Every structure is written in C-alpha cells, then in structure tokens.
Length: 493
Ligand SMILES: Nc1ncnc2c1ncn2[C@@H]1O[C@H](COP(=O)(O)OP(=O)(O)O)[C@@H](O)[C@H]1O
Ligand SMILES: [Mg+2]
Image (cartoon, rainbow, N blue to C red):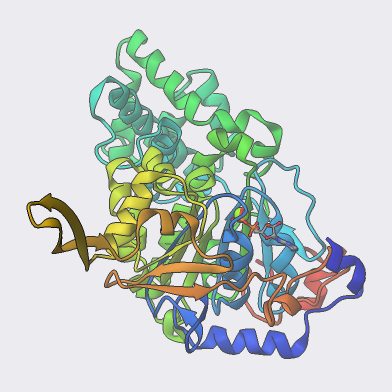
C-alpha cells in the first residue's frame, strides 16, 4: 500500500480523526452512506442497508470500512479478503477486542488481532441451539436457504441430515466431545456413543434421544444416505485448518455483543462453498446473542451490533437474511450487506431476492451494474414523468406544401435503466425506505478525511489494548505469556 510506506511503521490512528469518527458513532443514525446535501448521510436509526455494486466499485472502501470504523457497538465483518481487517483493526482495537475467525487457518493476522474459534458443538448446548445450528448448516450446504427444508427428494435428505446432526451435536456438547469427535461419529456412521450420552443425560423420553434413536433404527440403505448427507454438510472440517478453528479459545457470542469488539470473519471466495455453512451457523449464533442482549437490560447503552457482510452471497448466505434485515434492527442488530447485483442474490435466496430493495430500509447503488432485472427494478422505483413531444408533419396538396404539428404527452422513466447502470463517478444512488431516490457522494476510506487517518497504512507494530471490560472468549483466551492478560488485568474467562 503506497500510503503505508509514506507514513511508516510507527503509524497510529490520528487522534482528532478518531474523535470525529467516534462522535459520528455516538449519533446512532444507522448505517453511514457518504456525503449528502447536508453533510454525512445515514440510513436512519434501525435501518439496515443493502449495497449493490460490481467488483471494484467501492463497496468495501466507501461503505464497509467507514461503517466498521464508526460503529458504536460490536461489529462482525465478513470478507473474502483480509482488506477490512487490515484497514480497520488498529482503530477498532482502541475500542474493544479485535478477533478473527479464520476457518482456513492460513490468514496472517496483524499484531493485536486474536484468532478465535467457533464450534457447532458449543452452539448446541441447548436443544433449540442444536436444532438451529444443524438447520443453518444443512440449508447453507445444500443451497436451500429459505422455505421448507424438507420438500422433494433433495429436501428429504436435507431434513433427515439436520435431524441427525442436531442430536449428535447436542450429545457432543453435553458429553464434552469435540467437533473432531463428532466428525469421527459421522464418518464411521456410528450413532451409538451419542445415543448413550443423550439417554444417560436427558433420559429415553427426550426429543433428542427419540430423534436419534428413530434415525438409527431406519433401514440400512436409508440410514447410509442420511449419514452421507450429514457427512457432506461437515465436509469443510476435513481440512485441518477448519477443524483447528473449532478449538479454543472459543468465541463467547454474549460477551462479544456486549462491548465494542470486532470479529473479522475471513474465508476466501474459492472455498466459500465448503466454508459457508460454518460461517452461517456462527453468524446465526451471534445474531441470537445480539437479540438476547437487546431483550435484556444490558442493551441500555443503545449501541446496536453491526453485521458488516461484505460479499454476503459468497461468504455469509444466511438462510434467514430477509428476517434478519426486517426484525434485526428492532432487536439491536443492524445489517450492512454487499452484493454485486440482485442476480447474485437470486441465486442464493430465490424469488425473495426480488424484494430485497424494499425489505432493506436503504439501498445504495454503485455504478457499473450489468444485470438488467436489477437495473429495471431500480429504474421503476424512480417512477415516470410526463414528457411533451411535438411531431411535425408535411403534406403536399393543391395549395402547396402544408405543415402540421401534433402535440402528445409520453411517459418516460425519471431515471432510465442506462443511467442507473452508468452511475455517476464518485457518487452512489440511494433508495430510502419510502423508495425515494437521491445521490450521495462516496467517501472512500483511503481517500477521505477522517476515515483516511483512521485506517492502517500497513500492518504496523503492536496495538494499544482495549480498555473495555468483558472477555469475548468462552475459554482459553490470551494468557499472561503473550502479555495480554497482564495488560488487561481482567478476570479469567
Ligand atoms: N487502500 C486503498 N488505497 C488505494 N486505492 C484503494 C484502496 N482500497 C481500495 N482502493 C481502490 O478503490 C476502488 C474500489 O475498491 P473496493 O472498495 O475494494 O471495491 P469493491 O469492494 O466494490 O470491490 C478500486 O479501484 C481499488 O483499487
Ligand atoms: Mg470489496
């Protein structure tokens, strides 16, 4: 990065700029959009935002990075590249813990960003948690994000695989078995240890015990199909990096949501098919924690949790994104989701994607979109205006050449599809909750004050440790040996 070499390794976020950004954060006006006619433009409190723009149109630098920097509460940022992490970790570390969930195990983390694990087993401590995590993983892996999971023959295997995984994960959680152990059960088609655990801990009448016992008593061919489907859902865990990401220190979603912490979730696009089920299941658990926080008294500070979902269709295709977007803001969770265009959404969320522009409170459209249906939908929102036209005609008659004029009124789109497609260089078209359209000037973080002074020009050296309380780890967080425990002086997790 050129700015990095100019500013050098000792770079620190500029105090005045950070103060400006933090002031902005306290305003609580939703998602930051750019510069409007009256200064900084926001989506409005409790309004999630959809960003549509092709590659290199500015989604990450002009929308995701400023919002991660200015979020007053916890931020979960997904990305297929470490760009958001590298740009924002230093500034975010002054507000809270910076954590990274990297299911490849290959990401090089800047100093001060701590690797954190997440395991479906820990999400399955409660039976409803086990059902949710199994459902999210199976849906994401099998590409049936919404609607009934069990329709058709494909749906039959998905439904059965979820019905098998839920009791297996719950049994492992109750019995202290790791994800490695669950994978072994699935690969060996061996449900007996889990059935014993459920029977001993919950009794033979429990729903989880019944469900697993029922599957284990189906005929061998059917059962083999169910085990194979479940095995496919867990395929990501065949890579050692993914399996290592289920080990401690594990993320504690409740503590994470309680402070201005940042969790970076990075998974390369090339492996998103395998890794998306893990990411989606983890996001679902953090979402539930955010909702719990809003329902409890600890949400009195009013700072919502922000899901900054860059490349959402690839890395975080949450089955229930539509309900996250509509119900989340009222429950302490804002979403900023970035997509290339609505065709990318249609491939993941089916026909529900056609309603994305209306269910997100605000949509930001960057120039260069090529998908005609997206362009038409946006153009239609602009409405029509009457254009008067006059047609001049000539006719030759006995009296010589006659000239006639005919006036007519035709309807034209206020914003034709080609204008939406081209966009305006450096500007974004915004659609608000009442479908009103307007232009906002983009403020790329690397180029615009104050964001420019808050983003890391390089990976730098050690970072100041956060002063906030609370450990976003379930167990085994940083210890005295790496100096973090000493500086924090916190209680052990
Ligand atoms: N830190 C940076 N320094 C200079 N240019 C950048 C930086 N980050 C992004 N850009 C440029 O800004 C443009 C938009 O990039 P980006 O925000 O990553 O787009 P998108 O996320 O839509 O793919 C690109 O031309 C990119 O090269
Ligand atoms: Mg990007």
